[in-house]
Image (tube, rainbow, N blue to C red; front, top):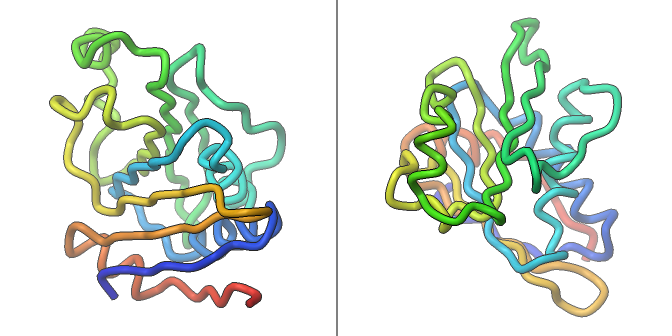
Length: 161
């Protein structure tokens, strides 16, 4: 599957998608999250992390730019780095912070506001766009690499219509 689109009813739909997506993730993925403020990017990330077994608060890394988490996938500890680049002034800030070292085959990187560092970020395996639509969200997932296609092929999600 190269593309997946759905309408998510209320926040519960976003949380259900995040939980389903979590079970399709593998180490080494780079995921871009696109959407306006309040579109549900952090809620989707929080749902993924909780479904992967993270216990505790998942905050938006708006001020820290990156928050690391360790979860288990198939019994193996995997680092997930949640980036929020909204407050970055330039792509060089991303490089200066040393964030490129997190992008490897053992780590899952989830990036909110990737356009703020697009020129220095590795290309995404999956691009997710969230748009507010009434009480819910419209979502589009695009697989942009072989690993992204494999992930979307594992995705088992049926939104409540």
